Length: 90
Image (cartoon, rainbow, N blue to C red; front, side, top):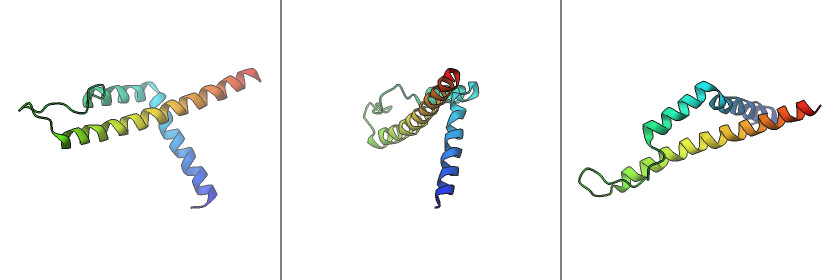
C-alpha cells in the first residue's frame, strides 16, 4: 500500500469514527450498550446456574468491539477539540 493510499485510508477511518460523536452516533452507541449489556460482567450464569465459558468469550468479544469504537470516537473528538481550540486562538 502506497503512502497516499495509507493517508486516504486513515482519513476515511477518522471520518467514520467522527460519526459516533454526532447525535445519531451517540444513539447508536447507547443502543449497543443497552442491547449487549456492556456494563454487565462477561461471566453470567446460564439458566441452569452454571457458567458458560463460550458465552463469556462471546460477550467479551462484543465488549471489545464496543470499546474499540468508543476509544476511536473519543480520540477523534479530542483531535477535533484541539483543532477548534487552535483555530480559536488564531
